Amino acid sequence: MKSIKEIQEEIVNEFSLLDGDQEMTVLYIMELGQKLDEMPDRDRTEENIVKGCQSKVWLTARLDGDKVLFAADSNTAITKGLVSLLLRIFSGQTPDTILSAEVDFMHKIGMERFIGTQRSNGFAAMMKQIKRYALAFKTQIEVGQ
Image (cartoon, rainbow, N blue to C red; front, side, top):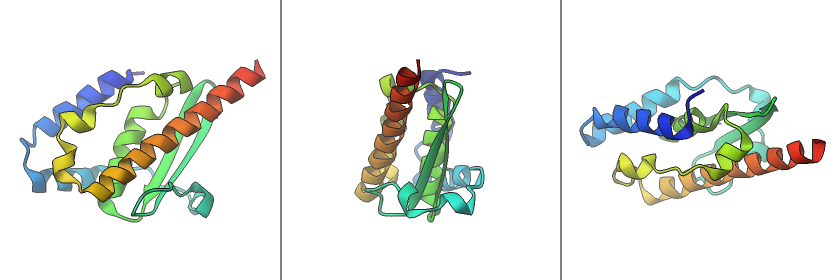
C-alpha cells in the first residue's frame, strides 16, 4: 500500500502534465469522478451527506481490519472528481495514518485557481468528515482492545 505522501506526489505529477491549463484541469477532475466506483442507492441518505458542501456529497466509511474504506458520490461532476481524489488518498489507510496526514496536494496543483470558494469550502468539509470517520474508527479499535 502506498503512503499518503506517495499518492499525493502521484496526483501532483498527473496534474503537472496539464501545465496549468484550467479547462483541461477541470475536464480531468470530472473524468476522475466518472471512474469513481458506483455508490449503492441505499447509501445516498440524508445522514451520509457531507455538511458544508454546496453540492450534494454522500460519504460513507467502514473498517476492514485496521483499514478504513471510503465510498462517495456527488450530484455534480466536478465535486465527484474532487471527492474521488480524497478517496484515492485515504481509502485503505489506517485511522492513525489518516489523522496524522499532511494533505498539501491541493496547494501544489494550484487547485484554488480551478475551483471557486464554495467548492474549496466543500473540499474542506469532505476532509473534515474523512478525519471524523478516522477518529471514530480509531476510538472503536482502542475500545475493542
